[in-house]
Image (cartoon, helix red, strand yellow):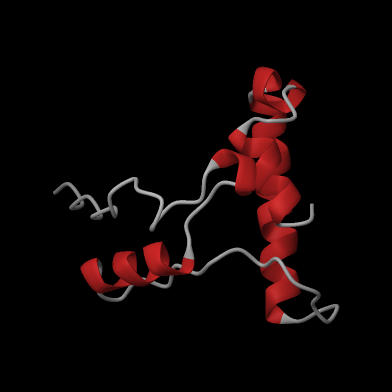
Length: 94
Protein backbone atom coordinates (compact mmCIF):
# COMPACT_ATOMS: atom_id res chain seq x y z
CA UNK A 1 0.00 0.00 0.00
CA UNK A 2 1.39 3.40 -0.99
CA UNK A 3 2.06 6.01 1.66
CA UNK A 4 -0.14 9.12 1.55
CA UNK A 5 1.70 12.23 0.33
CA UNK A 6 2.34 14.90 2.94
CA UNK A 7 0.53 18.18 2.45
CA UNK A 8 3.01 20.98 1.70
CA UNK A 9 2.10 24.59 2.46
CA UNK A 10 1.72 26.84 -0.61
CA UNK A 11 4.98 28.24 -2.00
CA UNK A 12 4.38 31.80 -0.78
CA UNK A 13 6.68 34.29 0.96
CA UNK A 14 4.94 33.59 4.27
CA UNK A 15 5.86 29.89 4.24
CA UNK A 16 9.07 29.68 2.19
CA UNK A 17 12.16 31.89 2.33
CA UNK A 18 13.41 33.21 -1.03
CA UNK A 19 16.68 31.78 -2.34
CA UNK A 20 18.59 35.02 -1.72
CA UNK A 21 17.64 34.85 1.97
CA UNK A 22 18.89 31.30 2.46
CA UNK A 23 16.05 29.18 1.02
CA UNK A 24 14.00 26.75 3.13
CA UNK A 25 10.81 27.03 5.16
CA UNK A 26 10.00 29.86 7.53
CA UNK A 27 8.75 29.24 11.09
CA UNK A 28 5.20 29.91 9.85
CA UNK A 29 5.68 27.35 7.07
CA UNK A 30 6.87 24.70 9.51
CA UNK A 31 3.95 25.45 11.85
CA UNK A 32 1.46 25.08 8.96
CA UNK A 33 3.09 21.85 7.80
CA UNK A 34 2.87 20.42 11.31
CA UNK A 35 -0.82 21.42 11.57
CA UNK A 36 -1.56 19.75 8.23
CA UNK A 37 0.49 16.61 9.03
CA UNK A 38 -0.15 15.52 12.65
CA UNK A 39 2.77 13.63 14.17
CA UNK A 40 5.35 15.46 12.05
CA UNK A 41 8.66 16.36 13.68
CA UNK A 42 9.74 18.92 11.06
CA UNK A 43 11.85 21.76 12.48
CA UNK A 44 13.35 24.98 11.15
CA UNK A 45 17.03 25.35 10.28
CA UNK A 46 19.69 25.53 13.01
CA UNK A 47 21.09 29.00 12.31
CA UNK A 48 22.34 30.34 15.64
CA UNK A 49 25.29 29.52 17.86
CA UNK A 50 25.00 26.05 19.41
CA UNK A 51 26.77 24.16 22.16
CA UNK A 52 29.05 21.43 20.75
CA UNK A 53 27.42 18.00 21.11
CA UNK A 54 23.91 19.40 21.67
CA UNK A 55 20.89 18.11 19.74
CA UNK A 56 20.93 21.21 17.54
CA UNK A 57 24.65 20.74 16.80
CA UNK A 58 23.98 17.13 15.80
CA UNK A 59 21.09 18.21 13.51
CA UNK A 60 23.37 20.76 11.87
CA UNK A 61 26.16 18.24 11.39
CA UNK A 62 23.69 15.76 9.88
CA UNK A 63 22.23 18.36 7.49
CA UNK A 64 25.68 19.48 6.42
CA UNK A 65 26.70 15.88 5.72
CA UNK A 66 23.53 15.22 3.67
CA UNK A 67 23.83 18.44 1.71
CA UNK A 68 27.52 17.77 1.01
CA UNK A 69 26.33 14.63 -0.78
CA UNK A 70 23.94 16.77 -2.83
CA UNK A 71 26.86 19.02 -3.76
CA UNK A 72 28.58 15.97 -5.27
CA UNK A 73 25.43 14.79 -7.02
CA UNK A 74 24.59 18.20 -8.50
CA UNK A 75 27.88 19.86 -9.52
CA UNK A 76 26.04 22.59 -11.42
CA UNK A 77 24.29 23.74 -8.22
CA UNK A 78 27.54 23.36 -6.27
CA UNK A 79 29.31 25.71 -8.67
CA UNK A 80 26.62 28.42 -8.53
CA UNK A 81 26.95 30.51 -5.32
CA UNK A 82 23.31 31.61 -5.65
CA UNK A 83 21.79 28.12 -5.95
CA UNK A 84 19.23 27.06 -3.33
CA UNK A 85 21.61 24.34 -2.17
CA UNK A 86 24.51 26.73 -1.56
CA UNK A 87 22.25 29.35 0.06
CA UNK A 88 20.71 26.76 2.38
CA UNK A 89 24.17 25.50 3.40
CA UNK A 90 25.21 29.08 4.11
CA UNK A 91 22.10 29.60 6.25
CA UNK A 92 22.85 26.43 8.24
CA UNK A 93 26.51 27.56 8.58
CA UNK A 94 27.97 24.49 6.87
